[in-house]
Amino acid sequence: MAIQGISITPLTLYVEEMKLDYPLFIGDGRDDMKGFYGPLIGFPTTILVDRDDNSCHSHSGYTPKAKFEAKILSFLELNP
Image (cartoon, rainbow, N blue to C red; front, side):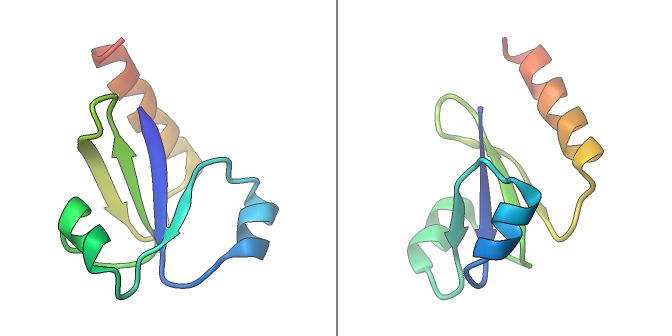
């Protein structure tokens, strides 16, 4: 499983402050991302990708860390 974030603009300071350790892509105006992940409704968009590169969960907007942790743990339990 991988975590990928999509933002409208570069968020260098935010990434450093929040200590994000996953890829953050700039998605505004990127038709290739829209084609791969589907329509991007809002930003930031976070996408969980399984081992086969399939998008298994997508969320737009702010989400507390605990909710993402719970979602990731549930996927890992179902797909060891």
